[in-house]
Length: 137
Image 1 (cartoon, rainbow, N blue to C red):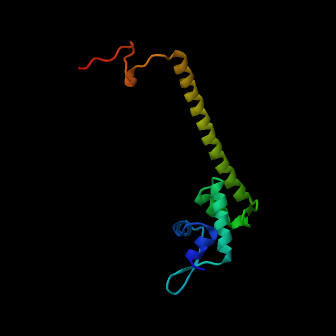
Image 2 (image 1 turned 135 degrees about the vertical axis):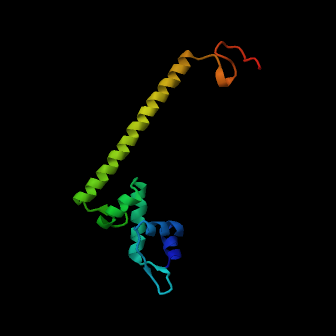
Image 3 (image 1 turned 90 degrees about the horizontal axis):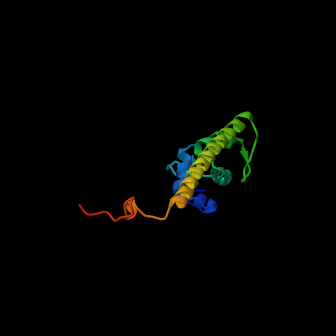
């Protein structure tokens, strides 16, 4: 099948399929005229890629672990290299969640403090810290 049919069957735009190829995730055959030719296994591979991207894996991670994937969902054979790669990715996600939680706590603190001290507007919101409108210079 050509790229248009693979795109229709997987609901993945052709430009994204070409991107997957550029990243080494798809390896279509080529006709004598240079057209990409895909087979049924590529339909499953594209579905695997989409599921793994939705799980937060990068295309680099996916290129590494795709040979361990079976089925559309996919199931991953738990070889040590694969498990190590997925654990690294999970640690990176945990680090991002931790950073977001710290940012959220700091912002919540500032909101609570501003609400506790609030009432008057000043600075860029119209009045000065003394509560008077600034005089034009």
